[in-house]
Image (tube, rainbow, N blue to C red; front, side, top):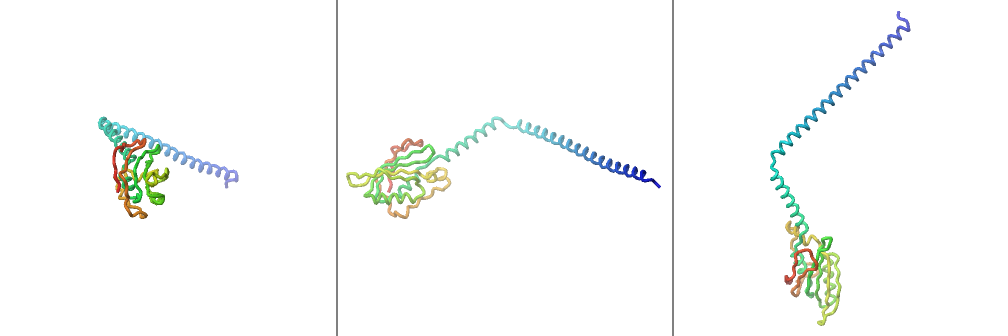
Length: 224
């Protein structure tokens, strides 16, 4: 029978063989993984080189003049889009003024300008039969979404006993947007419910005040 020392020696050799086997398995797995990573890296480099070759071949088939023409066309399209986005049209504004001016008020002067922020600012002068008519007109303008920052000023009596006034306001960009008018967003402007009577005005003199847009000086617009 083996002695206790002999049994201990057999156990030690068995443990060493087991751990040696595990170490061998780990080593083999590590080598295989390293080889796989290396092979995959070679595959990726090959694919990148192939795509580079294909790109070079495709670029060679393109006509440089055609590319320049397409780039120039794209720049023109972007420029036109920017112009349309900032271009204004005044006809909806005139239609609104015509439909919202009370019958007892006569407009005598109209001017507009564009601020540094791109806001269309209008200044309208006229006269009314009395202060109550101006108050009614102010109420009509305050109820509409098309005018903002409305200010009535220069209220004075003229020799005929009428009240002269000046009104300034900022115009809502959606009202005068040429781009939106093309999209059909500037539909017919309804007359405010507070004034069912049409406006009775004298010919409206249209001018501009330091406006960066096209001048309307000399254009005569008659509202009814």
